[in-house]
Amino acid sequence: MAETLTPDICVIGGGSGGLSVAAAAAAFGVPVVLIEKHKMGGDCLNTGCVPSKALLAAAKRAAHMQNSGAFGVTAQGVTVDFAKVHKHVHGVIAAIAPVDSGERFTGLGVRVIQGHASFKDSRTVIVGDLYEIRARRFVIATGSTPALPPISGLDQGPYLTNETIFDLTALPKHLIVIGAGPIGLEMAQAFRRFGSEVTVLEAAAPLAKDDPECAAIVLDALEREGVVIRGGVKAVRVAYASRSVKVTIEGTSGEDTLEGTHLLVATGRKATTGGLGLEAAGITYDRSGIIVNKQLKTTNKRVYAIGDAAAGQLQFTHAANNHAGLVIRNALFRLPVRVNNDIIPWVTYTEPELAQTGLSESQARQRGIKIRILRWPYHDNDRAQTERETHGHIKVITTTKGKILGVTIVGAQAGELITAWTLAIAQGLNIRAFTGIVLPYPTLSEIGKRAAIDYFTPSLTSPWVRSIIAWLRIFG
Image 1 (tube, rainbow, N blue to C red):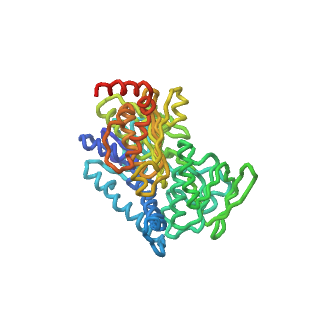
Image 2: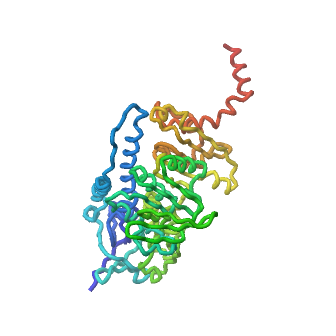
Image 3: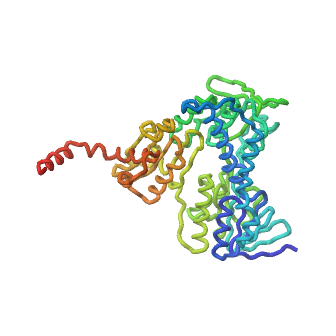
């Protein structure tokens, strides 16, 4: 007979969002059950953010050693031992894993269950024939899986996704990447820096969700490193041989066939909703995920869906963590909450990095807002010159009265620099806030201040201001 549990909250999914809900609920003394059918830590720890950034860090070291001559430092015979790169990547995962482990969460007071969860009815979840959980509130945090395009022959061989590429122990000779979004381009640059030939195929525009002006700087950097990027082409057929893979593409000039040794499919993510018994719980969903309102509640008001599992939400770890906080405030304290994707930043971790927060130029114009655009280049920053990181700029979108609406940064450490602007947008600050701040010199952060000062330059140098200064000079 199944064991019956009656917690206040039952969380389905042990990824970033689910773990955040469980930890917070337990910290407040609330009985909570967490169900995970695979690895604790979810995609982010095991096949996403953590391994990808560990791989990128290794690739960055390789590139910097190869390009150190400009600093007067010559590194002779730089080689890449990809088996050791693999060991580094999985060593990082192992170092972080205890923080997300079942043992740790059990110690926090969470009842952790390993198994497949599905709804029996609107108020009950079962885990096989072992457990029956009747909770006051449920949180679905099942994340997402790679979305595979309908390409003839793709499923007939060993293609890679973000779930399998970090298992490679030998360097691909020629990696073909389908998809020029963040995952595809990050992996493309990394493997090119390790020594692979890399060809990227994209049916639409590469980095289509980002500001095209800033995305172009990233694409140019990758192409200068030897990554071949072919936009406007659609992969229509895949054929595998013992040691190769052929991809047939269609474009404006007709068909063409490319041959490589490995194929990475990086065409986005889809919400994990299968096998959850959502119909039995009265929960509506579609191909984009579980339908939620602005409070992240599903059509069953006892059930929330967060992170990648929720339709219409940004698919980032930090977005899922933000959702977790909203759920805790609403479920435990009955406080009104509302998802605001305008304050969720994102970063593409290529080199240069590409970071976005708030509204882009096109989004602001689509909303009919009268805007001003401020820019400042990296090459006019002293720290950027010392580091030889002079490619890129900041682009700030404000109202005509100076309220900060959005910021895009492309360049070195863009992901770190975007944080202050995210806070500014969340707090509704005016660009004036950045003109008076004292920043350490020399730092890249000064790029943002210079852009802010540029907002006031026309008025400060106007004839009217000059007249005021001339008049004041009369008094000594």
